[in-house]
Length: 91
Image (cartoon, rainbow, N blue to C red; front, top):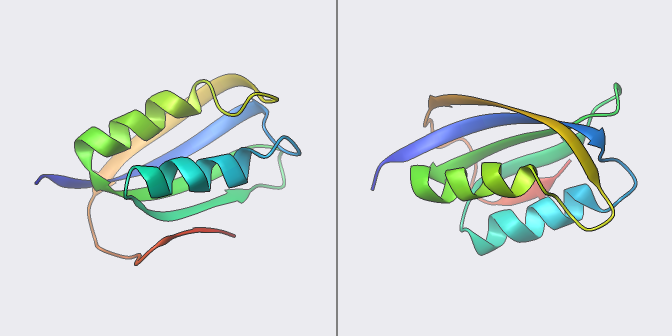
């Protein structure tokens, strides 16, 4: 299995709409590790590790997000897998 790491920044109406909790649920469903957190500038930051196929599914999901969110932009930066995380957490 080809493991990768992706750093994602999601812009739009993404705070106060259960984006972090929904991201954790999706990442857990996809068997990914990493974290999601709100940023002071109103964006949501996600760092995730796992198979490239499952990470791609997470990136695709981020373009939609949970029902109450309005996603304007998603920036994803693919990185080298470093096995930093054991689970997926909300920070």
